[in-house]
Length: 149
Image (cartoon, rainbow, N blue to C red; front, side, top):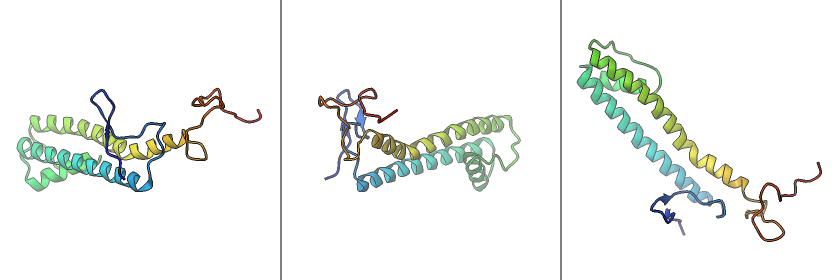
């Protein structure tokens, strides 16, 4: 049975399991990675489309040259074509700043499932359950047996 995103009670949708829940099965984890990758592909396509329109309309470049410049800037390589108008140079500057933020966003979205799974795994003991103290409460950093000093 697959888990659907649940509501947190305050109107927000929660896509990740809480630390008190078990680790997501591998099949659902792979599904989560595919969903994140699809979001990234859609975001990159929209970003390139935005750049192509801007370079074509403001920079007066052909569609293929506009695509080349948008892709190169979004990929972190820099402009290829010489821009003649001031508005095209301003657009290229703003698009370059956007591309830097977009790169960080893409990296964060792609790494989020792995980081969450790693951190979630730290909350689990060897049996795959939340560590508990002897009184049945969830163990905190001060109640765990850390072994000999």
